[in-house]
Length: 610
Image (cartoon, rainbow, N blue to C red; front, top):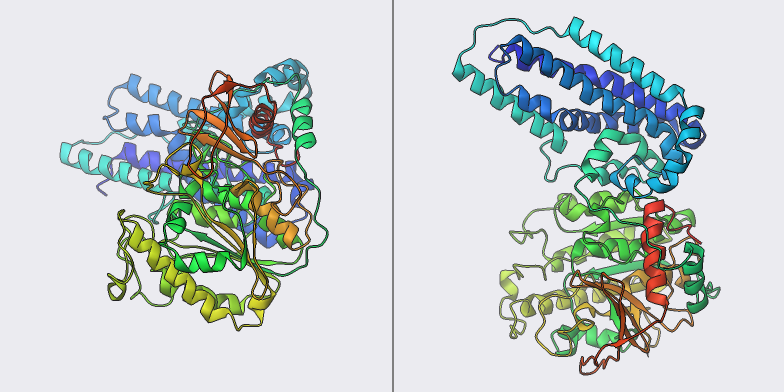
């Protein structure tokens, strides 16, 4: 065999480590049996199988210094001893963290990540009694560490061999390649991440799949937060929100089918400038919210807002942040509890922007991607299936869904490079921005979708929610400003019902609560950042503008808060986009939301943080 003994030995060690990792998963399962006994054994077995993929990734990540050390010949005795000690030390740390995480999981509600150190002030006060009470966990870790050393010394001795440089280079390349494949979890389109462990649809099962070293190492690069103390207590901040917002349940809602259409990159500007004739027609027959704001500027930020009521207030998408495995109560999960079947459709490749794992981990039963689309002739050459045929496919699939259902679709043709099928070139106005033609094409595809379904019985028992993930290229003064850059369409449409213009300020994170209200399902377990657009609330929108200032847009104007927590207020003209000169403000609502949101993320109880 062309593999060097030292590289072959390392592979054998890694395979051997699958045994303690599996035992740790078994231990985690029995330690938290009160949680896992509610799940059928086939789901538990599936979690164990899925977990092996993450175990291999964790082993290679944790032992990356050992892998690098093995890229030099281990000829001297000192190098061999040093390599063994490093191997034992790293894996002792991994096992110790995993064992202690058995108990920490009860405090944090998720596997150990770097944000643990942001709340260590609270935990350090309890550390002495915790160590005394759980003395057996560090003792077991120590015993395992000693066992690791002697097992490795006995079973994985390094044999002498004749070394040639061509063979060493080839063997090293093979080692690096296999390690890379293991870390990314295979050769699929996208590398696995923490969110990939949660595709069984239950947060608890995701924590059984993932392991502590993997969770910690993969979230290590993510930014953490510091606890905020803008109010004496978090309860004081929550009371400000409860006193200012109308969170009452709308009891008039009826259980109907739901369709959520998320249009790629549709700014309200395109609608007002005439590039969306069908949407403009539809708005007259809909509850139309022209003062609606997306909570982010990227597609990957849209789903946490639209499904879970979480505004995008971090420097990175929450689905890729250190908080990605937090427990959130999301609208699809509440629909599922009420008997709904939930399907999500996106014409892009499976794995694109993490939509597949995010939707399955937050209440959807199935995710349909480009790979599930019949035929390949409608591929746009870059992202996936053109919107026209894909929306037609979506309509056919909705017909088959068990009722009541929640069907969501995310379009893609109006994403760069803004491809339009050859037969539709020059059919739509090219406008002054390169996106305009593709906006017209998607609007036309939407028209054909509604023409196809309007006579269907199921469609007459369906509420359609239409919005965009974010805005895109803008050219008018009205939209090129702090508020206008977030403005996107939001329509609630029912076939045969009359329309109404709604003047309140709304946001993406209000949509999940709005959907629940519309079908008569209580959403009180959702975060306080989700307020139904159907309520009597005055309406507010939270945003993180330019990665610098937090803003709260409301009926009275715009509050902005910089990183030094200095707050200003500006009047805003919705028709011109003009903002007045900033004036100092002491209104507490924006600060209350920030303390509630960030401290709730750190404590992993945002949805229950009342």
